[in-house]
Length: 436
Image (cartoon, rainbow, N blue to C red; front, side, top):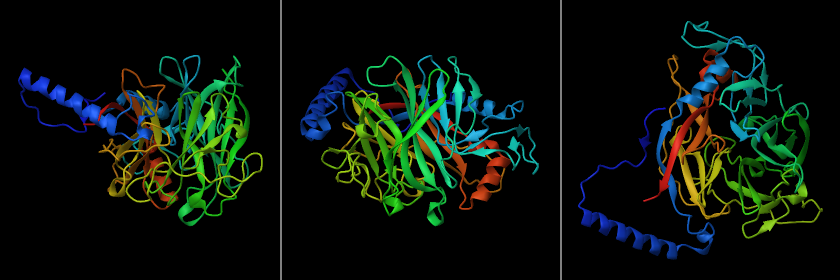
């Protein structure tokens, strides 16, 4: 792992003991004033809640290398060689299930590639599926790829992308546990919707310990919402607090990864993710049982439409995929930056409640991208995701996906097959600190 890079490094100065004590006393007084001045909504997180930003970060070469070695193993012919939409969940027996969206399977070949460049490469005919699962052992080694796709396409022209997952009781109070996986149901689109039109949020149930798919239910159907950019898909991240599972989601405000999208939140009592009637959606003032703008709730009655908790469509907002972690009473949201930094810089927001108010964006950082031998380097970073299963010692592990940036999907596919490292997750380790 490389040395930490301080996001807000300042030149140091010598200080006398008297000056240090004066600074401490002034700091305590200022903190008390700020706490008193915080709006009531900002006190929900308790005394532990406060501004938190990324103080430093370092590349996690161990995890990045683990996926590179697994994908580059030329002995395997039917497993994962690259993918995006990286999510993880720790299983009760200590294993970690990694979930991916668009995935390449098959065999890779040692360099040089057909163009003479020194990259591991794959055939253009390599199998491609919409989702996959990879199992990591208790010791941290990647063991096997589950039969893919793990979640079959619901119909021609439709597919499922897995997002957040968590282990919960099969039913409230049950001793038997299962894995619930949130899924984004999307359909083929044209124009700006080249990555699919949002259709519905679903929840899949996997049995334990064998990870067998038992069933899939729809919890929020968005197909009645006429404007695709107003459809909200939930599950990019989940956080447990006070007996609830808070499920964050977003709309595809501009059908791109730019942070012009809005963040939304729903909540479900612990252990009831697969029960559509248990879901509640934030409408700006309260929790309501409806999650669409055009349909009623599970009982068929009308309700208010959900309202975003973050996003102004311009400088403040999220990409279509973002991540939220709860750190000592503070909710911290990670997303790609705005404007020219949208595909290179990770930034963050913080709040004392899932519904906000959200403060930020904070100063971001640019995680490293893989080097490529092409004349033009068009790689991009997106989909920052926190992995609680791997985080430890007060540091957060965050992944980000890498892809070749091109408006023509066929060109992008050719480049990430020419150099397989251009379509794999990479990892960093973050240290958060109270914002000064």
